[in-house]
Length: 339
Image (cartoon, rainbow, N blue to C red; front, side):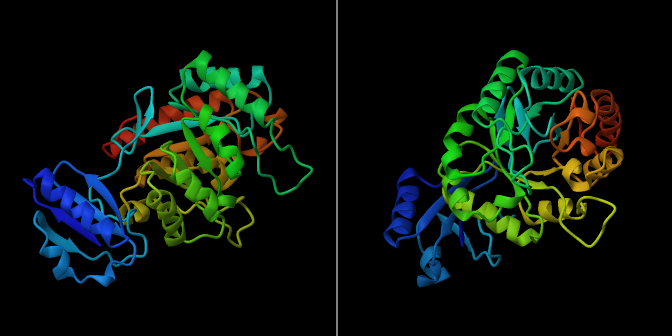
């Protein structure tokens, strides 16, 4: 349920509304937009009927949200959420933000070279895995804490904000010390304890769609972060598992406009994991931007043939430059920009 407040509501009336919500053991979530201020009520608000809330001084309208995801819904917030990352980077606005870098941090030389190459070609955020969730226990698991140190070095020397993944609650604090965005990967999309803990932090969270998750399940996972107090959530479509054998996953292009119609949260596309094929990354990136993606997350490695993970889907720096040139044209054609 949401309360739409009058434009000229007094502080006294506002405080009384919040106090009443908390007296009923409910949780208020405040969203101040350009046109209106609304208060989302989380909890079993059915204990009081609509008339109860309508009678409170300062309340203009009461709307019951029917969707199971409340705070992520367009009913709760009509305008797009714009997530401030740092260094002037904002995800969810008119600019399409490109995130690029290697799947895994492998060495100082590798991550610094990758960071320089993607930055000079227009990437605004550096990606790189320090902790890597792998299907096989014998595959490269990342450099872990050493990887975080190298990401911190790259951030300092190259000047790009950083995104990297946390696999557990124990890793969250360490990752948050370095990362500007905490990634919660597909395998952890429904790790509810991890989501709740990330929700208690203010650090932006990128939540990747699970390999067999519906869009509603993705939004319900986002709700765990939002309902615990962190409004800075970015959704990521990274492909789902289907019966198709020619691609690693099936990247659901239709999910991009669908999620944006259901939710105010920014949506980023990951064509690297979505296809698993280097030659498909550029065309699927173009399609993603045309479909309304607020950002792209692309794997780029200085020497993909030597990559310790996901080399087959990693672009060379030269291919990434080609992607940026082409994706700028598509962004412009759909009324967006890549600066």
